[in-house]
Amino acid sequence: MRRHEVSDQQWELLKELLPLRKGPGRPPADARKMVNGMLWILNTGAPWRDLPERYGPWRTVYDRFNLWSRDGTLDRMLAKLQVRLDAKGLIDWDLFCIDGSVVRASRAAAGARKKTGPASR
Image (cartoon, rainbow, N blue to C red; front, side, top):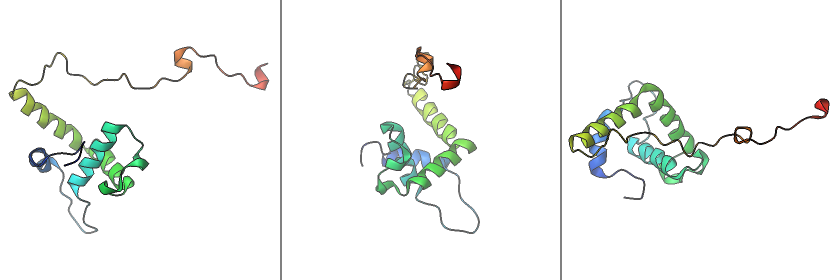
């Protein structure tokens, strides 16, 4: 198992939450590989195009991430993991939050002067 990838035990918890694809067409890409690719991106902060090839085509992982975000799959996965950790007393709900400290603000939001064009002179 590589860094940022789910273990066999973690995968057993998550795989039952993933949607099953029905109908004709190409078989879906390996879901575990998709999850590992998503975790790699989220942990490294790298652009999608820099996703290592071992996780499959970056566009496939990106599309699956967007699909699972829209249909609530990722929310269900998080909720299941939270319930499990809470049952063990490992979550302090007073401190549980999403850290937004890495969200970049524009230069103007930080007090930089606005650029003026030739028409405004």
